[in-house]
Length: 114
Length: 115
Image 1: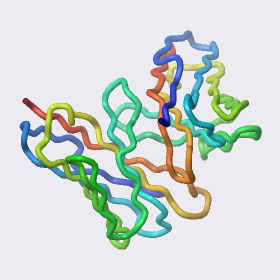
Image 2: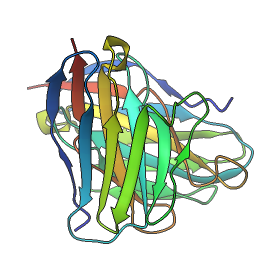
Image 3: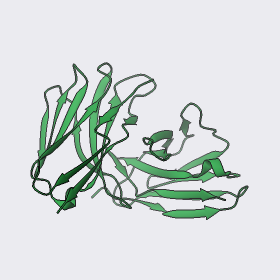
Image 4: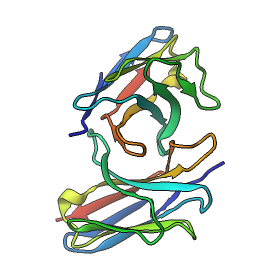
């Protein structure tokens, strides 16, 4: 149990376009999901916490108008990178919280902006 | 700024060797310490969640210890196998304040086990 999927696994887009990444908890409901980003040779960094039915909470330095998060159901959260630029190229990974301290991760999405 | 350090950054061992890694984390405002195993192109897999000082957890050949007073955790792998090759991540979870419930990750230790 506790499987989280993420789609797409990789995407290449042109500068200025928007990209949507989906995160689904397949066999449990998650009121809270998290979005992380990892740059090369760096640790996973929390971008935002997504709560079902309410606005996401963004970490300091993360632009909420650029990284739109929607957690419309207990099994789905989406991250939309709007007007993507090459500096947004990164590895994005989500997690879903099952109990108060258990987080289960998706396999991640490699975004390349050209 | 909360900092989680892992050492070594990478490790190359022979099949059958035992190995261990270190995770250092803030000793205040502790709630939990997580260990994950992350193979390339797969989801990070939860290994252990540790909450109590002195905790020891075991899963097959892998075990972990926790010292919250001094802020470190060790992960041990006994008799490493090639399938143990992965990046091992630790993550600190604080107990209150703005970071409550959030995971703060180290950069990981990349283990390669040669047959």
